[in-house]
Image (cartoon, rainbow, N blue to C red; front, side, top):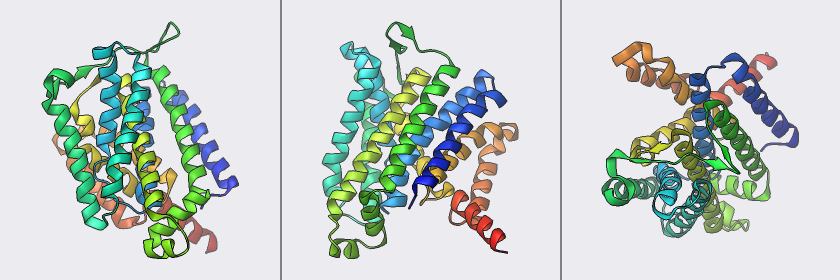
Amino acid sequence: MTGPRSKLILLSSLLAVLVVVPLLFPSAFHLRVAALVWINAIAALGLALVMGLAGQVSLGHAGFMGIGAYATALGPRHFGLDPLLSMALGVIGAAVLALLVGRPILRLKGHYLAVATLGLGILVHLVLVSEVAITGGPDGIQVPRLVVAGWRVVGPEVWYWITGVCLILATWIALNLEDSSTGRALRALHDSEIAASVVGVDVARHKLLVFVLAAVYAAIAGGLLALLNRFVTPDVASFLRSIELVTMVVIGGMGSMMGAIVGAALLTVLPQALTFFHEYEHAVLGLLIILFMVFLRQGIVPGLLSLFARWRSA
């Protein structure tokens, strides 16, 4: 549970990082990588609500990212809509799909639920690949430049601040949810759905609520990614992208919102930092992930906080 003081510290720390990064790494390349970190962190935050707070497994989360990204691209291309409006419609579409699909699949538990969500993600990816006339197929589709009130939204620095502010808002909402009565109900069903239902928690309603909210987070991240890159391919909704998001949440710490952000930062920045290993890049990345999970089993953030608490008590 996060108290008001802890929320203030966490949000202030995040804001401080947002301000300091451009001072330390002012190049366009570094700002673009940082913007990707913020976007991945938004998607990981939504998944952290599902997995860390409610204890539900989702292996198809990237499918909702794909819906948000492709709606942002297809709206202007086929209907002449503004990219920002198209992105909003994509977020609504992802929420509706999560609402419709979530009702039956969230009745499942354990690996059955994992397989069901995996199937949803694969289905979205398959549609994006096969509907060549609409989506461009495996080659992808171009996204028009965003223009707001005559202002052309261009440049890594601009997108750095846009995505950073979106992340702070997303974190604030997630922390407030975690500290609310809904958050307490979600933690209760994480521990035991039977016990939660006995004390009056509407298990089905709360599981569906957090699943829809996570889909909204993912769709927003997908839309921002499409606008940043100005190009989108079906890879945004691939199974590997879903596994990457799950890894971000697990390695950062499933029960921690800040852990999801740290995990997203690690898995976004490390591949860029390990490029000098050339063909051994993925092997080194995998080894580092294994070491993190062996020595910090709770995740990076909870593990480091636990070590710090032991050090203080000693």
